[in-house]
Length: 199
Image (tube, rainbow, N blue to C red):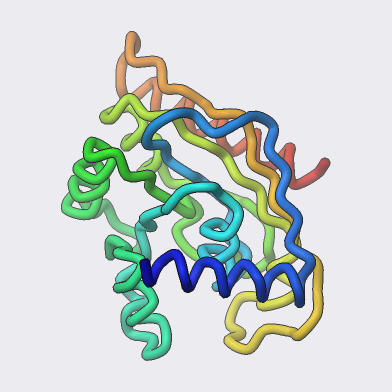
């Protein structure tokens, strides 16, 4: 209930101050899925939560729990802490368990906020989750948050425009080798997000 109330308030704020606009290529798939988005700002998790029509549990850098005002928010959102820049099998196991229970997971596979606002790399954790769970990846392109609250800043600008594009689900091919498919999925997801950012 608290999650829904906070989501409603956050969505209202994003609509009023940042004219939040959300466009879907297709309806979301039934059941759990894995939302994968580019990462320009601390605002991005809030933007994703306010853009999709279901609860999302994020894998969040364990370093974010050190920020006083973020820690309680992460706990309310039931975020899963994950170690930055290193494989965290415990976090991935927790995420797989939540997917099997029917919860949707959210990730920013760049491994942190982009200092430039551009997508330059993607780690493969989301693709591993998709292959091991059989759940689809839903690519998301977020535009506008970098100019409102860029890397290293904690106080957002009062005005701006945020646009969100939610792409067609990408399903893992479970009939081929996991290593090959994870690489294929990463390339597909990255190219899709880059394309949506440019449109």
